[in-house]
Image (spheres, rainbow, N blue to C red):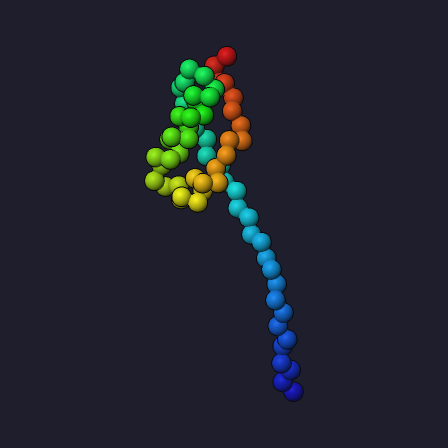
Length: 64
């Protein structure tokens, strides 16, 4: 007896989040963020899509 399998459609969303951290020297927090984005843009290992979706998640002054 050969039963035919009934197939169904499924919608699956996959999500992946990665982070990159940059340590930069700057006169202000705004300038540091600007420099970090410039370094990210220059990084050839990062895909264009990743760069377009990048946003700042955390900034901390290291030497207070």
